[in-house]
Image (cartoon, rainbow, N blue to C red; front, top):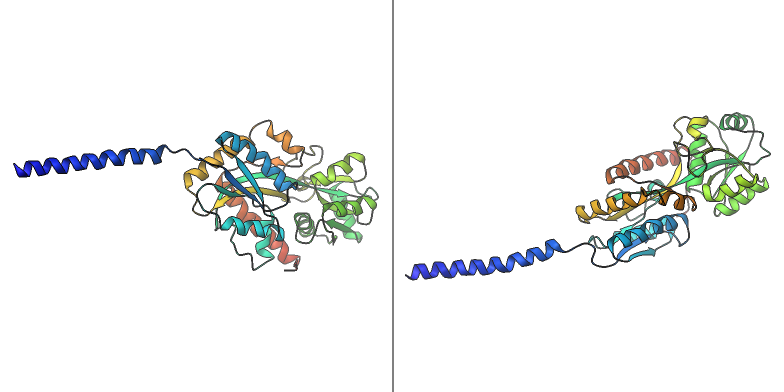
Length: 328
């Protein structure tokens, strides 16, 4: 009789524990993510191209999730400050980071980054592409890429950029390497003064970001010869890709993407990528981003991993061959 009673007691305890455990597990399993605001670190100042493209997607992401999507600008050191800040965030699905082309270039320019863009974060997906347009001053007697190459081989000319080691500089050095020319680089402190001197004729060539170039192309102050996209750009549909206009295989543009701290749950990364892709494929987002000089660039985490690896290798080769260095 005692054994029977003991069995009943044990069974009763088991039922009690099970009864407590089931609701506890169900509570966690049923908890929807996110349950509070989500933070997005942008490593550049507000109003710039990376910040603008980030806001194009964070707002609809927040609306889709029913939570606030907070853009946190952590500018400094060409994107390094923001990358380091993102590295310290908890991998709980409530912190994300927008890296850009700078983070594929910096590993070949600096040894003290304090982070590894390929291995210290969970790659979510690419976000936007910023076309680079090859433009020349109208006084230059060339109307296409082939003529520019021939002219550059016979004459000393120069190209302006927004600064040493930046996307517009590297696009020019890549062109030099692939076209077999040596157009002299003249760095400026930003796209505006670089474009100003091109319009003024102090330099003859520029590999310009689309927002800087398009108004002057339309006004006739400069002439467009090609775009760095591998296919025609929606921002300048009448301008041929440089790869098709005289330099096969040429590809150069700026970009931004989305990552999360290492260890962020895989199901959250998968959901964010799916939601991000849905937004970027929305037919209304393209024209809106185009007005800001950007193009939607959706892709899977695996696509992003391959793209990032290629970008790091490509720009690393350009930097070594052109002997590019920056002050640290």
